[in-house]
Image (cartoon, rainbow, N blue to C red; front, side):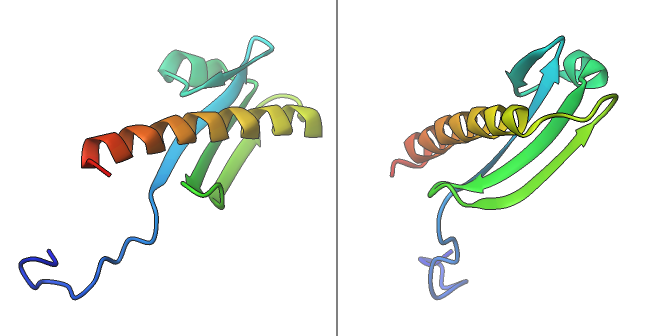
Length: 95
């Protein structure tokens, strides 16, 4: 778009990625499929920048409240998945 003079500068400050995480049968999982999501005790969507800053965190305890420790483990798992997505984005874009 810059080369075609549609925009003057790159508007993207840094890569962004999103993942789902949840607790299914007592285990924290990354990137829940439909069956896992529909039976999760807790599910969460996390959107982060490549530098590790949060854009959105949306989570729900479906049956029982979850602990701060569980939240910490789910956020760590989300960060790991988002980091892997950011690596794949950079590779695909040749950055």
